[in-house]
Image 1 (tube, helix red, strand yellow):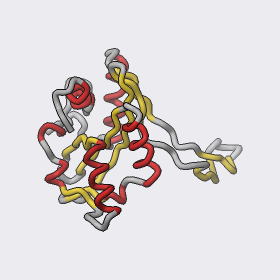
Image 2 (image 1 turned 90 degrees about the vertical axis):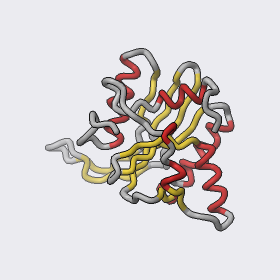
Image 3 (image 1 turned 30 degrees about the vertical axis):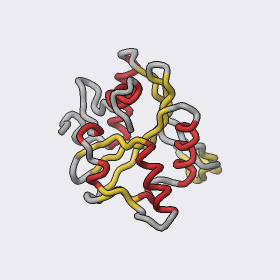
Length: 177
């Protein structure tokens, strides 16, 4: 269990980790902002009064690590027994699928809030569950199918969530998913 991230939200822990990866020259991972169209701004305070999402975003993060492109989305759940597939939007799934089919590594980082556990979910597992759900199967992935020790994300020094340790094992072929 990691304790360095206590009090941080998942995306904040990923941001801190990404800054450390960049600082240490290990990887360049960027958060992808959701495109927003501002309609009205309070001229006195500069705060946005009215806006809407211009279009659907892709996924939360895109980057490069050791010559391999990676794309992933960060998800949190309070449910201890499963991860509901409804947490993944259709356009996100198809973006990750396309990324994977074009030779990149795509995955989800799933944080079980009440358990304080974070896992790497390979896209192959997401694809299998997604396709099964389209054929009438489960609409979720059981916790026990996600919570494999080899996919548990721990911290390393100033890197609160060292998810690239798992990506490295996959890239080097040490982990067949």
